Image 1 (cartoon, rainbow, N blue to C red):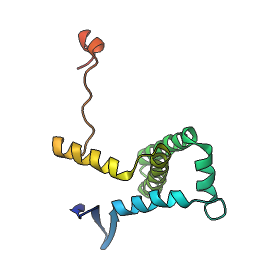
Image 2: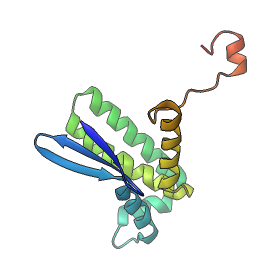
Image 3: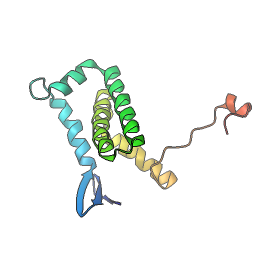
Image 4: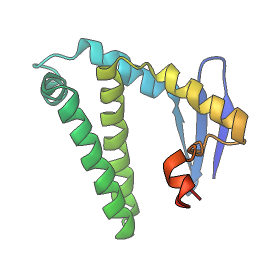
Length: 138
């Protein structure tokens, strides 16, 4: 069970599991995002190489991580899903950075969706006029 707590600048989630509590908040993602400005080959060789490869390679890595999560989930290997999820979030933040998208923009979009739908779920797509006309947009 997770409890979301809104602070002035971050949303914090407290997760309870087996008598332990782990705190995750938007500040952790902001720290990773900001640290990407200071990456160097000596201290962060893998991240430096990834950033040097550019947007296409970063996007490819993001797709690979999402696929790995899906595979681990269908194999019922929860611990692996956790590890791969951390990898996915890392690559997602690197891609945001490469695209010049600040984490705050993502949080604002999620808040907009929550205000509109009650939760930050994916917004419904507008039906395509062509497919709706032939009955596929339903």
